[in-house]
Picture 1 (cartoon, rainbow, N blue to C red):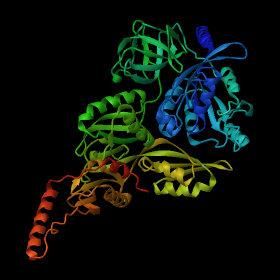
Picture 2: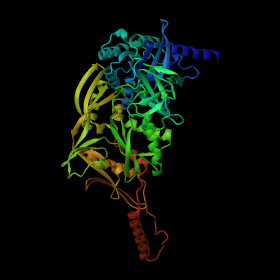
Picture 3: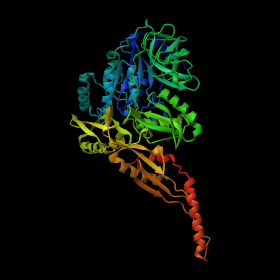
Length: 616
């Protein structure tokens, strides 16, 4: 107990002795599974931010989902206190970042609040596509880069080869690369020394009007919305009347503080600090990530130019299983959006599914994570419609408009053209997998634009691809054919005219709008047959015959039939005239005809998800 209180006291003394020159704000840039969370654990241990008793693997990954999958989904901010060998005390604000391509928006938010970045590269895997993408993002924001070679203690580590890759990528000297191991703790002190020596302190002005950039927010059911921010200029004190410049809302700073493993309240925070604010906001829409906090009585002239607005890449409808849960789902999505600003949603109505929401996601993994979080954190079991991308279309008479759902597409007789979004994709892989990867890209209507050998064992392929073709299974198939050695990243390019048609799925002549999709005309027959066959396997048999049809307009291009469950009504007849049996069969036939007219086909949730897996 005594040692613990001493430690807490020393931390408080170190904090209040701080000056802006002794603050370092930085993030970690790494591809998925390059050891970022493990290295963060060692940094927390080394600075005694977390005790050995409370330490657990992936300490900053506080979602069960993150631990199960071994990925970082949310960025996390934490403050560490470090005593340098020269005797000076330093405050380190680490803002952790995800590594998967679908969560690049989280990375952009972290970069906006930092002056430096640790570029973490796995010594056994080398430079990966997402590493390059996030690195360029950091360079655009003028962040100072510290290259770190992780997992140097592994037998498969290729220290010299990967060091050469890093030098070619950022143009640094060999002695600037820090060798480290997140597992054993090798090089942690060297990393801290590099942070102190190479990352510049914040350049804010404490005397200027308050400007604090909100880079994240969470919802607490007892305390309301809690915003995380970095103060660029000025001083924020407990009890100050604050204004959110984007929304114009004004509140009192009921509590402010710093972020360690727990929230630690403070009386004031100054320029350069990273912290949290609780104002009692209960409505999630009253606060926006990227907004600027200023003082009501002494406001700043302009807001901070934050990170880019999110651009959803994949759209899908999310509907409650029971329509009575619609308002609960709305509330759950609002709270999720607080914690994940890349989620975009608006109300939508479906003939088959009732009231729900049209949601925009950054990718299929993002969609999957949101669906899982709705279930685990809010108890919302939902139906998700077939995901699609956003298209641009134009009628023969009229202005261009956006097509977010297949039902938005007008009839072919009035339609002039449709444009679909294209992306530029970078794939880094081993030379032996070039053939299968190119075949996959060509199958997805891709075009090879560049082939560049980074080293003898690593090649970068650049493709131009329609976004719709990579939405469903491209990433999974890429990993499969390259045995996990290929990394993938993409950037939006432009919109191009394409021969797209609306593929309708009909059950007994009625359209199921949740299963409709916009597809390329060349692939319409293939996809229609696949969906019909898959639905035949998934839909339960009824007392009447079910016709499953795929149609383009009035033309049926594929059909499957689920035969009716038939009761043997003649079983009780033995001997006698055949006319008695015929009467019973005719009666059954009339009953089935009537049942088919009034009966409805229920599509189970499993069918909506399984239909997407057409290549299995």
